[in-house]
Length: 322
Image (cartoon, rainbow, N blue to C red; front, side, top):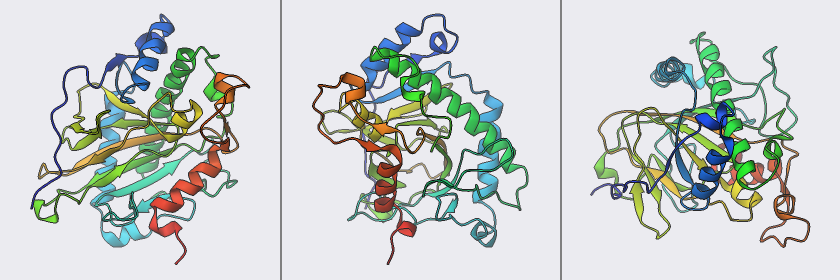
């Protein structure tokens, strides 16, 4: 038996964009044009000049390893809540109905206010479940959340400008975001498990935008526009961002949400730091707001919150009632 394979990525097949001129305001339009073009192709983009300090990233990785390598009984004390916060063990996710369960483990947290409280006004938003056995993790995790969320905000301004919209178009209802961060741990994957076993199986991301910080292990594979799987390795100094389903729906398919998967054939542990950006749950996803009231959309309008509840119910076993 063997692993699912992918060919090496050709130069410029996944574009690399320096967003410094967008972040500092020196030339946001040129960055916006580049983001717009890239989002209509593969929908995956390497981002330089993102501004997240290397110490923030290294501290987050160290905290994540301390969590995942902790005693299983300790991890059970923060098992994922019905509000999708906490530790999700191996076998807790499956991306397609007929697929094997994923090998990954995750720890998920999200927005909280200055007092450490999170509004419980939606099925996918509730109190974060911080591990008492790792008292320093909260500070590190929330620092990463805020830094990555800031990157997402800059990118959403760029996408808006690329669509000839006001730069705050995608952020007008984002003061109580449904955004989630997660540490995702992939154990070394044995070849004997077969080519149909994945760290995470083929899927598109559910929300608006994903901001991914990879390590140097590799294993991420993306399906190109011809249907062939290609590697998306880590490039030092970059983040990898991708259009997710709701941004594709918001742009009526103009921006592409692309299938991807993870095969960790390295023999090493793999760690990803993931920010899934989403606005407030009541945000209406309606392409007519982008293209004008006479635009005829392929899909009906839906709120961000309703869409995510539907998608999470299909993907995560703990959310399905037996």
